Length: 413
Image (cartoon, rainbow, N blue to C red; front, side, top):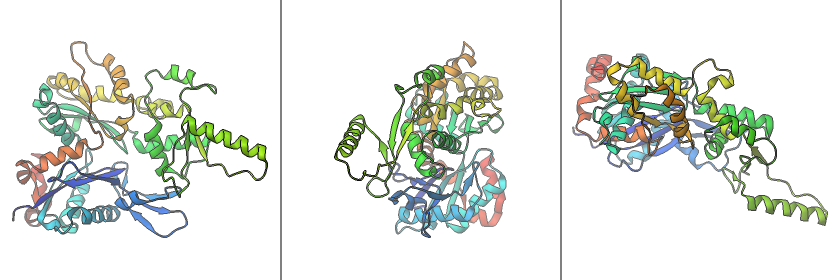
């Protein structure tokens, strides 16, 4: 039976990107988690979290921990609920699936993912690949004139939720022995920011979901950390921002207070003081200053927060050195930045400044920020799903039932 569609899923530790290969411009992006409001029994699962009006004091459950799925029942529930809306009246048994998998994935976890997709979700076939190889496919389509892309070669920096990986790719295949990892990702940076702002301003230790949003709104990568730290001292700091926290009624996520809002609030307080009477309740405001650049700084210098490991630039250099010497020139010329953390303003410029001294002078250094770093791997997977290669690469229900795990060997060839 010919497939009626191929579903594409990029399942990360923080979010799921899901869509149809027939409609590559409209993927869904939603949290890979379930949430409960404090003191209530109702649970919001996966895509349902996007409709929440109150994001304060959420209790989160995530099926992924340290980059690997640890709660398969919750992961299946999150994906199954989102699939109902995506497929409409179409059955999963008429569709194939392209699914991303973690780097250096354990065989038992790969088999569990295939079992979930084919036996429990009911897909007709499945193909799994690491995000870096898929992201490079999309990048190659956007920059077809780059010699490294013509060879399917590049070094993909995947600054994800759980970790930050430097992943060399050649001939569209990841080179597993050359992968290097920094044990910091978006989750650790959010936790770091929670501690900083809770100590200096407002207690936000229970506000993980909200702090992720605030981090994405306010953080940037400094180009001169020492100078910015000096400038951040005192009341005249150019980096100081006030973030008005949500009230759970009219303002779901809160917002950065503008100068006009701050002046109006101060005038209202003075007017109220002159008139006397009861004081109006103040809307809580989070003060953020040098946290804006010191949080992402940890990616480049993990030793600043007590981690005994090299930073991102050193990890990339080690990954290139671990690949075959004949590939070094191509890898240095085609460094691709993907993942949510790479969207932080100044990320590419800072990485170039730190990486250039580590690159031999006779090599060109090319660092490319994906047009949409979060969706880059998904879009590459959608390209593969719509290509003639998918039927050859995919493992079908029939192969899985007749050969079991031996059918997965074709992905290693």
